[in-house]
Image: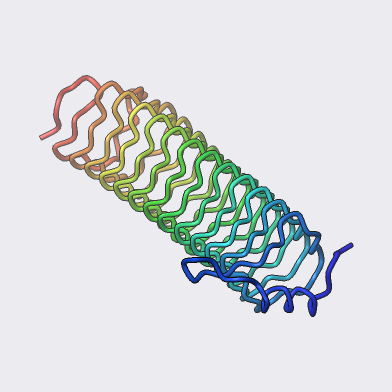
Length: 275
């Protein structure tokens, strides 16, 4: 049960002291705010470390640069919430509703986002190393230049998501739904994409060296100038996949895997080049 009422929270926010650099931030670390309707409130720079916001309503609330490290936010409704620059490292966000939320430059390192609804969320330049995003819905989310090394995205939905220049080295995207995803110039060194569905994906210039792509479906994907050096492409589907200028040196492929792919200036697994 929440320790405070909405009215009491509003009072704390309104009387929060300012710091030397003219920032203000309510001190609510460790406070139980579960199930409260906090929609539309301004928590900018607030200290909410370890706070319990389970099931709270934060839709359209302002939490720019708030500290939520280790906070419990399971099943929170943060639709269209502004979490720009917020620290959510180690936070519990499982089953949270973050659709259309702004998480630009936010820190979600090792956060639990299992099953979170993050459709249309803005996460460019966000930090998500080792974040757990299994079964999360990131449809149309913007993760461009996000740092996601070691993140777990197994069974996640990334349909039409933008991950241009994102860092996904050693990330797990097994069985992820990635149709029309933009991974242009993304870093996927040693990433696991076993069984991932990448129909019509944009992988131009992506680095997938040493990646695991067994049984992945790259039908109609644009992989021009992508690097698959030493990648495991066993049983991958490459129907009409554009591999122009791609590097497959050392990649594991079945003999006829490239029969319907588009090859031009492609470096094959044996080092030879298709003219």
